[in-house]
Image 1 (spheres, rainbow, N blue to C red):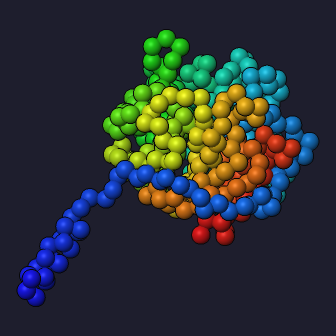
Image 2: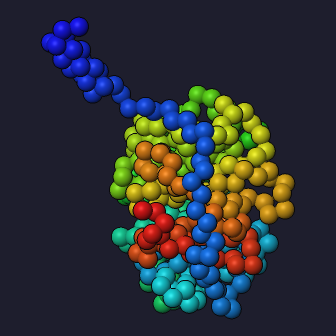
Image 3: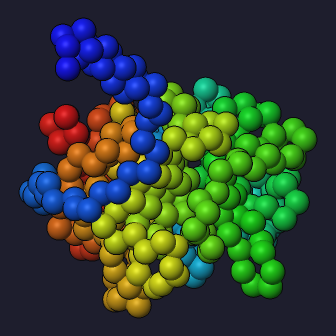
Length: 339
C-alpha cells in the first residue's frame, strides 16, 4: 500500500466514525464498582411525629414534605419538616371523603415557582391546589380544585412545567383489573394527554416509574420488573436503552429490580432490589446504582439498609432516603459520592 493510499484509507475510516450514530442499546454485563456508604447515612428524626412506613418524600421551598399512603391512616397524612434542620413544622390534610380531605391520595406535583403543590385524589379524579403559605397560616385551610383528571388516566410521577404542559407517568387501564404505565404530556387546561411515541418492543406488561429532568431535556423509564432503563428526550424519542445483567427480554416475573429512581444533578440514581415481592421487607433495596445522563454505569452505593423511596434535595446536595428500618429516614451527602 502506497503512502497516499494509507492516508486516504485513514481519512475514510475517520469519516465513517464521525457519521456513525451513537449506540442506543447498551448492555451492562456487570455492575461491580461497589462503594460501602453505610456509615455515611445520617439519620433524620421526626420528633413526636409518627409516620407510617408507606410514604413518599418531597422537597418544596424551605420544607421537606412527607406524605403517608397507608390505607389505615386515620390522622393527618401530610407532614412538613424544616428542610435544613428537619424539625417538625406542621401535620395537615385528613384522609377521608369530607371537604378538604383526600379519599385516595396520589403522587404530589410540585410547583416551585408558585410555592404550592398539587395533590391528586385518585378516588374523585381531581387535582387539588395547596399553597404552602396559606396552609401554614390557616389551620382551617381548604384547597381549591385545580382540574379534573384526563378520562381513564391517572397521573403519576409528573413534573409541572406550566398549566398547558406537564410531563410524566400516567396509569392507563387495560382490560379488566389490569393496567400499564405510560409516559405522556398532560395539558391541565384541556385535559388532553399526548402519549410519548416510544415503547420498548419486548415489554409486554409495563411497570415503570418515570423520572423527568427539564434541565437536561430527558426522561427515564425506571422499570420495576425488568432490568432496564429507557432514556428518551422530552418529545419521546429514544436516546438509550440500558440493560442490566438480569435483563430477560421482557419475561414477566415476580422479582423487582429498580424500585425507584431520581435525578441527582447530572447523575441518574436508582434503588436496585433484585428481591421477590413476597420477601418480608417488601419493596426495598439496599443498593443505589449511579449512571451518567447517557446511561453509562458509574458505581454502586451500598447503603446497607432497606430503602423504600428516594428524593433529591438539590439545595443541600443530599439524597433523602425513606427506609423500612429502625432508621426510618436518613440522608446521604453527595458532595464526594457522585463525583
